[in-house]
Length: 140
Image 1: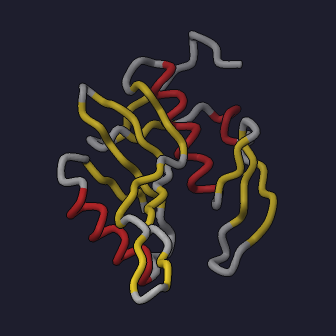
Image 2 (image 1 turned 180 degrees about the vertical axis):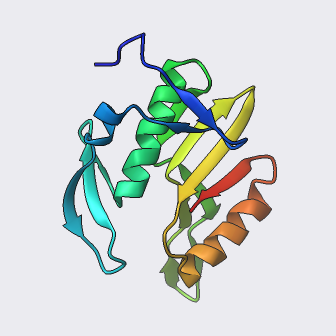
């Protein structure tokens, strides 16, 4: 599906890229959620928003161009193990990021956000505390 002659133009230091016009229409809206984000289907993957879908396409093209490698969708990070207290079992707390990839040997974790919930803010703090060596980026 990808052609080797796709022209990718860098925009800024964060590695954002400008997609060719013909690829922008690959984001097909599926459903709207309570934050007005439209569920989007691209390459058989469902994304929570068109913005997240567009970022996937950018990262996919960056990987094809050799700028990044090992692109992973929805990586799971364990923040706290499950445990029992007075006979009650508490589930593990996990953080599911949008993307993880390698750039120049460094692991980068990205989350595309339109709206920051309180749960997201707490889990982000827990993630940064438990995994201090990752480079975490919010794409707004």
